[in-house]
Image (cartoon, rainbow, N blue to C red; front, top):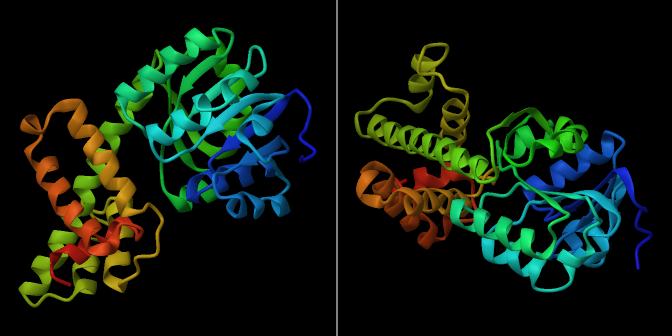
Length: 294
């Protein structure tokens, strides 16, 4: 069993150390917070031992003694299995905070919050999905869309300051997840717009670099659109935000609002699903360009 730190206000557990979770754990440890980590793939979590994190053998071991537990797991099903499928929920310290920071949708978030309140009413649940991809995560510049009990805000502030540029508090748990779906819908439409503009440019004989030059510095030069335009231009689809997870978020938004009310997003979902089915799901969301004939 790993030598897991004892209870303390500066002890944080991170469950899920993929692209985002690993960057968050590194920043937490670098900020001087005692950080334990766990991942379903032990080799993924093991790489964080050199960054000052303690690697736990199980979710229960990671959670035990932590004042703040951060989950960054890919889906609601995985999250429920990890927290409620074993003894992890019982391992929370009394008065601890659980910050659920992955994107799992509104219904799943409120359902999990209700289940926790029945099993562990002494644990505070904070719904706090993040906006940002690999680069901002590594730089500690994520936007945190937080919601939950007001008394939890002071407890999570040191950790949120280490991983984010700003935490926006939105009210009761569930509001963070609602805002995240809106933000990601906006982002997804921007990225698909870039992909289709590049496809049109190619059909009209316009060089990709010239399109980038024409947009640069003007009102259309949104940072995320610019970054993905250049990735598409270079044919660089190394994952920063994998397309399969971007599609998951789009489908969560459609499920929450109804496809009939969001026709552009519904069409985008069909387009991106074709790209995922063609084998591009683990590539960056900029691989949406590959579904357009290139």
